[in-house]
Length: 82
Image (cartoon, rainbow, N blue to C red):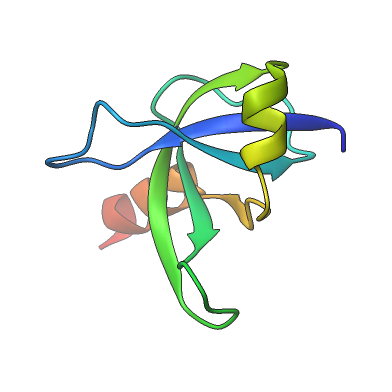
């Protein structure tokens, strides 16, 4: 495993961080990322990057991978063209 990213979700549990494996480098605080929903392989949620971690507890808790970073720049360009 290259690294573990801690992800939070906006809303009531925003103070909670969840561990996900990732090979994505250069994530910044609050970058949106696509992650699989619990207990599924074909449904997804958007979470927000908090920080990378090398903590053994976080590493042990990471059982799913981040799918990808959301390309907000491309989306903003589409809005501009509209």
